[in-house]
Length: 505
Image (cartoon, rainbow, N blue to C red):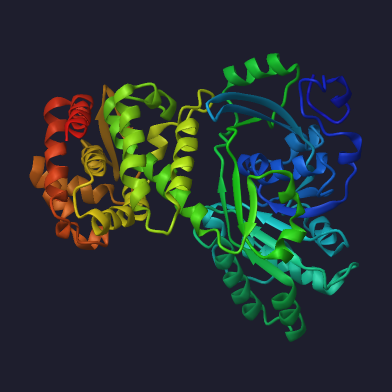
């Protein structure tokens, strides 16, 4: 049996969170750019939950912007999909199967542009959501009348301009646009590009006035691990467990956060936030960004080199290794929490840290460390350097866990081989490609220097780090000592020695 509207009646409602017929008939309120699992596992999750509670009462029209693939999988299943929530929350196992009826239909931009514009002109349309990746929010000067524009910001402007010209509903009703792309100030950046496109297209003053008064762009932060489509073995096991096949099925962890920057007017439009405490509208969401970027992402970044050198493949497997688990908990709670460069209540940071440790230990999510090493050096600069500098401002001493993380990073980046512009590291008998824009820079230093000379050459480059790390008393020396220990003893023995030293100090 394949999941579809016709087959919902054959699915045991005691085992599933199912959409009723009334939910499937709700009006379309949301235009969503992107078909990916993050949108289905977070924004659409909240909308589905609200609809089932009778709160939001609106469904999602999804725009597939790329030409890759089609809409056949959605069409065959009446846009229904299963979200299997698996993991640990507050130390307890969570297992829930949700069949989401949030999406009403999926339209391809190149084939169904007129239908998309017709929806935008209708009386129920009020929200635009997006996740087009960081590449999506880029300026491409192009016309916004006629066929579907190529770029996402131009598509947004085309939709808004068509609504202004052809609206069948109340033009005074606000349109709220929430960007979820993983870049800071995502909504603000999108708005700035759309404004540039208004100028480029020489749109009339009446539209510009309506746009500035009625259209609200919101920055937002999304935080939920929603892996892609399960592998064949996992999919087969889930199909047997569920009793049907679902080509759109995805897993999700229990933790969810969608922090949206906005006022009461935004909260009123996004009424689905009332259905779940994980959806938040507040005037300032910086605290949520800091907690996520520093504690979750930052800990990932400092730990991934250590795990790779230790031959540990996934985050979950690191959490069952005592040495790695102690490091992860230690660097997060003892060094990152007290040095977050933002005014945060320590109790709140500690509570968030505990939720992160639960998420890392999730046995159902296969989060590969090698994927976390992508653009490793950029992540260290963005996520860790501000914390490191603030740690020194507050304590003026070496954060040894951070220093060890830097040492493992430098070891990982000291690649063994260059082939056709790609750089490779051999670990535990496996060859890994180091995917980092600065891989050539580290390779060059590694070829010219060895041991602590390599550490000194890379760490003292203030231009590269956008900070003079040599001015931090003892830090480069500590990194060099840990680097030498990793080379001489192996990363696990070096890590165990670090933990013994911390306990005895």
